[in-house]
Amino acid sequence: MSESPTTAADVKVLVQEGGIRFIRLWFTDILGQLKSFSINAEELDDAFEGGMGFDGSSITGFNAIEESDMIAMPDPSTFRVIPWRPEEQGVARMFCDIQTPEGTPYEGDPRHVLRRAIDRMHAMGFDTFNVGPELEYFLFKDNKGTETLDQGGYFDLTTLDAGSDVRRETVLALEQQGIHVEYSHHEVGPSQHEVDMRYADALKMADDCMTYRITVKEYAMKYGWHATFMPKPLFGENGSGMHTHLSLFKDGRNAFFDADDTYFLSDVGKAFIAGQLKHAREMSSIFAQWVNSYKRLVPGYEAPVYVAWSRRNRSALVRVPLYHPGKEMTTRMELRCPDPACNPYLTFAALLHAGLEGIEKGYELPEPMEKNLYHLAPDDRKRLGIEQLPETLGEAIELTAESELVLRTLGEHMFNRYVEIKRQEWEDYRVQVTQWELDRYLPVL
Picture 1: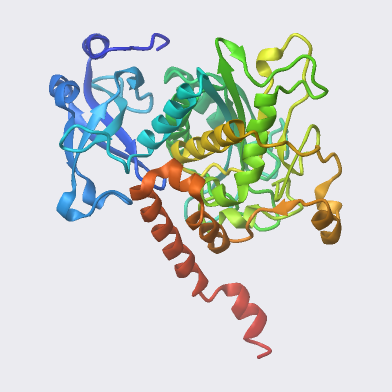
Picture 2 (picture 1 turned 180 degrees about the horizontal axis):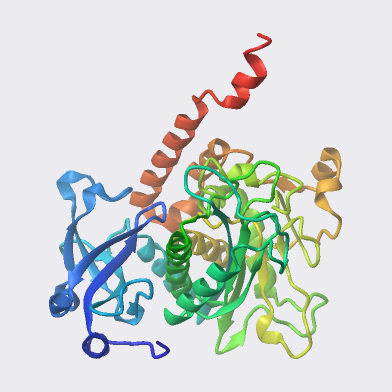
């Protein structure tokens, strides 16, 4: 379906014409897990008028039992038919904004957190924050283990790439849901894949990331396989990243571009990038939010760990793709540290706030690092003032707990819940006795 509905009336026409019987209302919890409940097509008028009530107390990070009533307010512009459901008596979905019973935005709603960041951007005179994420994932035989389907490598097109059929079906399903796909290919790791969506404004893209993840999983399941966005499922192989391309637009022009600059970067672009570098460590628990995320962020596997920027160097946290004459609109920065298991609403909101902070406060962008940062001795890195991302979720969440930027991004209610949930996750992990320890110590100690 190429036409996007914009109003409740448009949606009702599409439901009528398409014989849609059920509409799923989608939203996410604080950790970016997709939540959904279904309404009958007859309930649409009520849903658009006053939203649909539900109990928020069982949603991670939402209110406790005594103030648990929530309203899901559907966003008509996100209406799409779900392609993996039967065509007869079809099923569609809409993303929702979560409200309190009084009708005000609920401060624990990740979509609201991103909307607030976009409001700040508008107040500073920019029109659009474009985001282009590249989400990688693995296909495994089932969800019990990590048995791969192939031994293929990057861009391989051989009988080795067992996933190419399911990848094609996934791309077609994404396009049916209004998501423009630019590339899809086999990734570096065995059984690892990537489907790249064309950039869009941040709110649409966060919705699209949620749609992408569920679509990938549904089509894998159709083949009896399991798709996972876990950042590092296989020891000794590349993890799955979500390289994220960012740019700001003002009056229809790319605010990052300056024809007279050595790097073709405007002052706005430089300050925005400087904001990412300055705040990367304290935002780390947002864009890499799981214990497992830090198994990916280690030197030597294409994942960046050193806080620097570069034009060619893929070991740096931020890369600025080379400018091609006549392509001013594509001037952008690429942040290489997020992983695809993050909450995209919170991640894009934090990245936008970090960039705006850089612009507002005039952060200076350091010189680019064109050396392979993995090869620098620790003393050299120290001398050059190159910091490193946190090495564990435990370290990351304590940096976040001190961060004014993340507090501003999430708002007090969500900030406190997030820190609490992540400290607990780290604590649960820290006290585990792993197979590695038993193998290593039991025989000798």
